[in-house]
Image: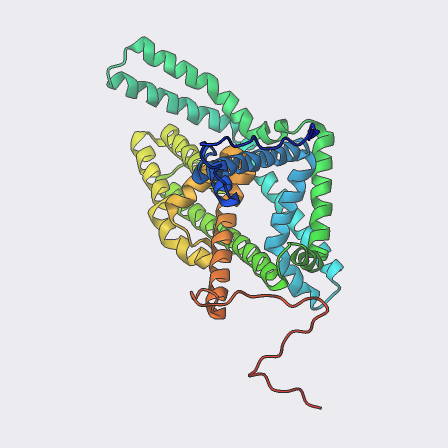
Length: 409
């Protein structure tokens, strides 16, 4: 009988007499065979994790690029958000006696007056003492030359170092006077940034509570968790900047008292520079301290400069560490080394905004994680035998608790 074979299905070959019986391979063995030449599980997990890290970094880089491209808008809005977060309690206090819009306008005008006053005092103090600054810096250059010669440097080398220092002094003074204004591209950008910042600040002060509720509802987490996150960030920001203000005032008082006792000129300018630069962690204290020491060196010599350096180190070191825990309280419950590393890393990535916001945002993350862990512990979810929490369906009513009293009829 002739059998026609199909092209798609081939019959098994006939088993000749004396051959061994055909071995049947089940599905389980075939699945096991399919994994013989596959990579191990740990290698696959490592590869997926590596691609996940690459994707996260790509997303972060894209966000940074987008924010950098829109820095003209992002910068004023971020600054307004920081100021609004810190000053919103004042608006809430005034809103008890007047409409919130009026309270926001009053606080905005007050902040503008304070900012203008600080800028005028700083610029006027430096501009009014430009000649004095040049003279003191020249004296400091002479002192530095004598130091180099006493250390064994020949006269020509010391004179070259002095000439370089004297050549850089006018540039330094010019940078102090016009550095901020010169960094802004044109008067139009300045006006636009200030206008956008003021407008954003007004609406953030006026509509802050409603914006906060909107964000809490759209964070993608349960409402109570969203409220915990928002409260943690706001509390950390307010406590941090309130503490920084207290510490800045304390440092200014200590440095001013030391300068007055030592007879150092330009006390007012030193006080303002010390107070304003205190809001920039580490770098601000270094810049203000160097400014005060250079003035003391040029005015009264080496001994006064060394004493002034000691005063600056005490104000920004030992005394500040005594005052900072009382000023900031629990707003910055972090190890100083962690704060230093996070601040420098954020400054390298985000610039001045990263320097200012790294510590409070890191502290907020620590406090939020601690609050959520405490809530889990209270709910008993950390026990090994805790049952997973399941939410009822939208159309299914939640089961009543056995211990809950029956509703009154």
